[in-house]
Amino acid sequence: MCGLTYAHAGVDLGRHRKMHEIAASVFKEVARSLGYEIHGAGGFTPHIDLLGHKLVLHVDGVGTKTLVLRRLRAMKVAGWDCVAMNANDVACGGARVVALSDYIAMDTASEDEFKDIVEGIAEAAVKVGAPVVSGETAILPGLARGVDVVCFALAIIDTDFENRARVGDVVIGLESWGLHANGYSLARKVIEEVVGGYDVTLDGVNVSAEMTKPTALYYSFLRKAVRMGYITSATHVTGGGWTKMKRVLGASADAKLKAPKPGRLFEILVRYGGIELEEAYRVFNMGVGLIVTCPPSRVDDVVRLALEEGFTSWILGEVVPGSRTIVIEADWRGGGRVEL
Image (cartoon, rainbow, N blue to C red; front, side, top):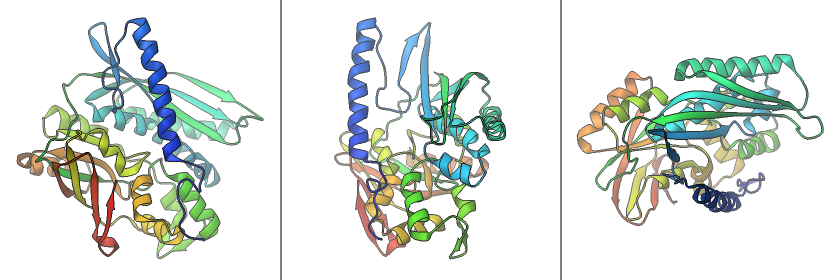
């Protein structure tokens, strides 16, 4: 089998985008009818003004990664991931997480699995510095066919941050810890149907170990980088891959980037799945989990801070005049070029 895409795995990004547009249209009207204005819609931290605060309510989940984590008995990672996904997102917009809530849906009441998930949530919550104040546990036989792990983050924007890349900015990428929590529907299709399973070592890569790695927590780095004025924009590379950077590009700017060589798991997925480069960068983080922009004078500060926070970073390129296009040169792939 070759030429696999996210659509082949059951996820059509085009339709997904249209569903977002439907929701945005409906809920914008709801807000208007109630006398609220939603600021920053379509970005990482949509918010409302309430009682003198810029209030953010964010939700994200672990998705089909839980199918792999359950199979490989690593459900603690699901708990960690659901917090990390939320915390990373809101920090991109200059927000501080003040409280968390969770929603865990299971097809059967497994105390051991539940305990692992909750411990993962707790561990990440401590790192973020936010209490888990509520939650819902739903046992759904006949409806659920696995486990769904979702978190909600209540956050306050306490630092003015436009989160907009500027022409002339340098683009810097911070390493991911692996797939994080997106693209698993396609990754599972490659590993399960082409490779034949998870209990294998390919080209020196332990597939099970790689597929169960947690999502990197960029929260502390982002909070410091925003507060110190080091960066002009931040993009958490999740669903949609590197196209997520379009959220911070204005209508008259492009990003010209040179991608670093990704981790071995990404190479395996691309090669064994016959995945085209454009599809790979639309679906996976390809080894870069966070993309930030900064003035040239701040590059050394950003690189130093990333290192202090435990992350390898790369200078990916620059922001240039254009029309909101992301151009990626993949020299590691023999000079492949992608436009998103």
